[in-house]
Image (cartoon, rainbow, N blue to C red; front, side):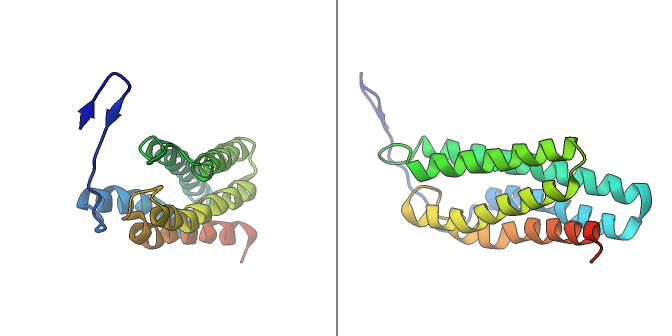
Length: 164
């Protein structure tokens, strides 16, 4: 690291392998999705509705967190934040917040659809961002394994809601 009056130069090494802490904090937050979907399908009645609502709220929280991750990574992008990074951050934030609002108003199916769209964005765009140097390299390997857990769980909840 080198500091001068105008700023700081940082040289960083980025491994392609997913760091173990990122495995823990990547897959750990996916467990409530799977547990919530399984509980909603198995419990029935009020406990099922509670599991559904808690899973949706968890999904909103994690998607909003992921929007912040995208913004945080943009601070360290060589040459400064790109338009795609900012657009992705705003898109994820808006989808997460809209899903939160939909949940508040009782529009459960809408909330689930918004979350599925948001997590779909993450699954597609994070590996692309990793290849472009706009996200950590390991996102290219982590996201395709991690994010489908959320998408499948949210899809199972939507299927339960619409009676499939």
